[in-house]
Length: 226
Image 1 (tube, one colour):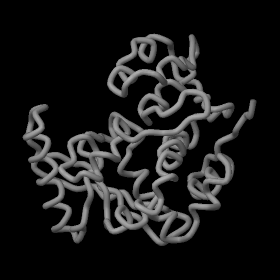
Image 2: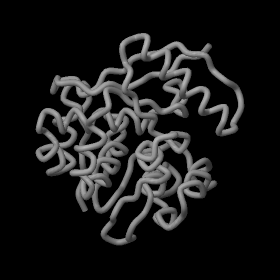
Image 3: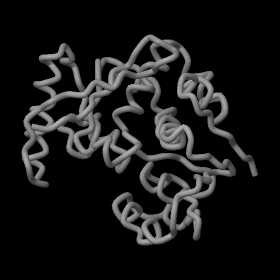
Image 4: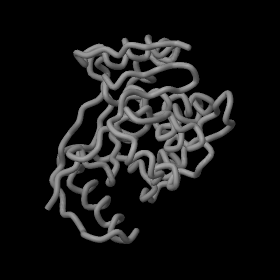
């Protein structure tokens, strides 16, 4: 058995998602078939808790939408580097105590961006720098959530029609004991913003995004603009 969270959108502006821990039977192995069994088991266990309409958001998703919404596959339009993946944008914007941001990572595919040796050898993470804005490390997922949602803005009509129909989101690869950012959590946040008509205000600026999305976080980010 294992435990993994699912993320549920809300109608509460002070809490844009609920994280529900689910016990399920875990199948060892890295094969797609094993991951699929894990996803099915997780969703079946969640259904017993009352969460039936769940979208797996990862490269292991059997749903086309969930697969396309993986940070490895989701593409972001940038001013200087063209269209890049969310994963490449995230990794290439990291600033470490001994180097970065390594903007050449933007031009790499998602897998090679994540595996870039400098990510592991440049010391502790200090902040993120992206398109002239410096993002501090608190709230912890703010920068990731921002670029992920920004990538979906050109497709918002499709997102409203299709993503918002789900009651919850999962990411079988996400382990909260090992990771911070989660694409399933960001999807839940986005659906909540849509349902409460807060999205347009939230995307006006990083500061507004921080104020609206993390108003109950306790720690608010600061921004430096170049």
